Image (cartoon, rainbow, N blue to C red; front, side, top):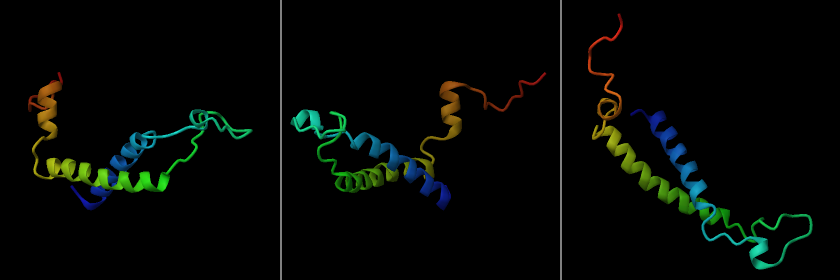
Length: 96
């Protein structure tokens, strides 16, 4: 895995983790009972995005380390996945 591949993998994992972390412990204006006029009741009262971004960064680093290790040390390869699901990479040609 190259450097750019590692960066892209980390970015994808970071954003996916962030989308999971955002709604955790979120209190909406409707939950608190203080809906600001002109806003939706589902709007967050306090979003804590900076804290959630730091939590996401730590979690994504751990997940990235595991996934990158699996890729670098070839614990699971593309051929393994193909053998489990499709069996198209067996070396024979299916073209007639």
